[in-house]
Image 1 (cartoon, rainbow, N blue to C red):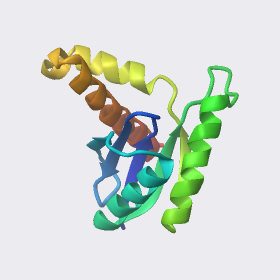
Image 2 (tube, one colour):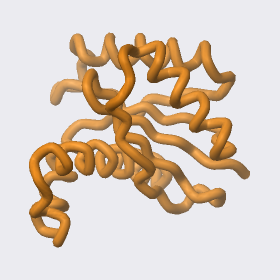
Image 3 (cartoon, helix red, strand yellow):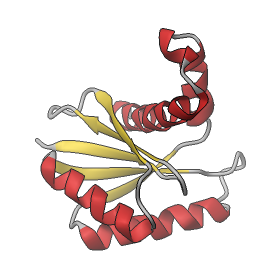
Image 4 (cartoon, helix red, strand yellow):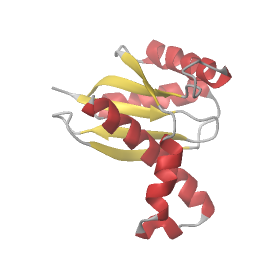
Length: 139
């Protein structure tokens, strides 16, 4: 059946999550922060897709609360176009509003909530991607 990869794109850090082969469960994969630009990130994620037998990609789209697309959506769509040129996989967009808020709330109530600030940011990005993916898989 193949796996689905979710991406919570950010200028500094990008969270990745991966489904199980049956596409029932999302798991956090990693937060990527050591790339120089969008193109390098797209190449890196294309490699992640090949390594993990990914057949579909979901990219979180940061819509405004009124459902409109702001400047961040333009950046995310630009990144998705670069990624699409690197790997020949279907790319879908999924509403990511409030995922970072939810991820922070989850971490605040977990044992991992006491992480140092820098490490916590990376965990939030991965968890945000996981939330995006699970919501996508459930709907």
